[in-house]
Image (cartoon, one colour):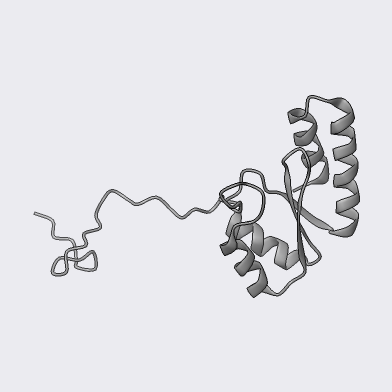
Length: 124
């Protein structure tokens, strides 16, 4: 996500101007350390208390092996930072929720073992 969009989202949701300004500064400093940054507030990465990452996400990140960082800003926003662009893209594809799969078609799927969807469709 672009840094300016992250800062705009923070400013739009923070009522106190001083807090918003300080938070934007934190985001800028974070982006200097981690060149690929995502705002993950509405992503499926949080644990139940929304204070840290879901264990499944942590395991996935560790299996990827690329350097990453999770930073929770005092205003409640969560940032994920990556050093590697490919790791950042893989994280975005996996966890951003944009590709939740395609919806089922017109209900042709039939789990019956003798009449499966792999059987040719008979037209009467």
